[in-house]
Image 1 (spheres, helix red, strand yellow):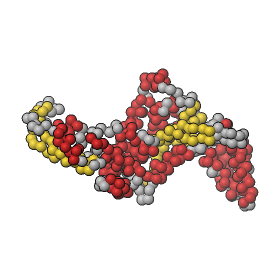
Image 2 (cartoon, one colour; image 1 turned 90 degrees about the vertical axis):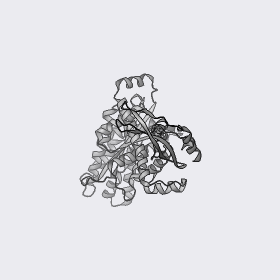
Image 3 (cartoon, helix red, strand yellow; image 1 turned 135 degrees about the vertical axis):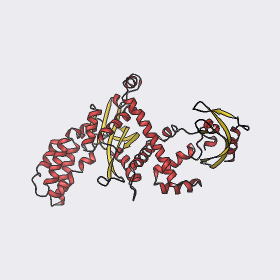
Image 4 (tube, one colour; image 1 turned 45 degrees about the horizontal axis):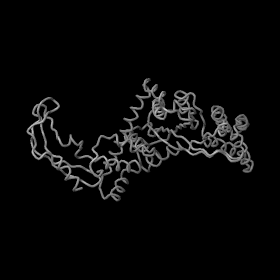
Length: 403
């Protein structure tokens, strides 16, 4: 910390000039030296620098701060990054306590919240740039000419509820989330086995906006992953209509797959209502799951249709018939497995849980919508391994010793 203070003192001219140019065209006059304070990972640094005031426009300036890009009274780049990272991981109060325990530097929960939101704002700025690029015909043409086409790329969409302050009619809002990823696959060793598939290179994005607006973010982030150029593009999701409407609109050539586990959730409620005997219910469930696994949707729908007028099972059976009929082309699981496609949407579900359940939906949390969005975007960047990319965009001075 002493070295940093000494280094700053060496950057200041020992004898200030009488005047310097002002942005208004006038001349700012030297008044006196003022103390500046910087907050860094090594602690608080105080330093003196010349202060100039323009008599024409009454604007003050500090040449040393301007020269070095210093922001007195605010955190250094590294301190902001580290505090924002803890704020993206934990509730701000807990973040403050943990940060002080690890670094012996006291940072208020309000400062940590501000730092996390600043990262979220930077993500928003980057996404805006992506949106502009994704609607720039020349940029798209250049990407098509130069960029390598992905062999197989996956996209996934989901949503989770967050508690928002100030809207009594709709206190719970959908935070929509998306993921782009590739997979590594291990082929089956025997005819009875299936592909072992694992998601890799996962990036997440999210927002609290209407589906149509989220579609613009889906397209923009997709262009950054060259989704529009992919030789094979596969989308995973549950049966939510907004998901498949967006996919069909923005990526009409993509393969659409309903998550296997979501599909199987419709089976047990019908069996439990239709069969008082537990053994019969288990046998029926096993048969329907087997037919679904094999992609025999006619058999699956027929199995549910037999109970649409049943006194107890009628309601869940009719719901299942509608669900499987509407999504039958997205449930060709035997065909999808043969091609080595992932058929579970665990990647995006995990993202939703990590962004919403583990961070935004902690006990007692009620969010201002703007703060919620920015914090969510910061956490998504952290989960996606994009933290360094975002933080280097912040216009800070990289002080000596990475302060």
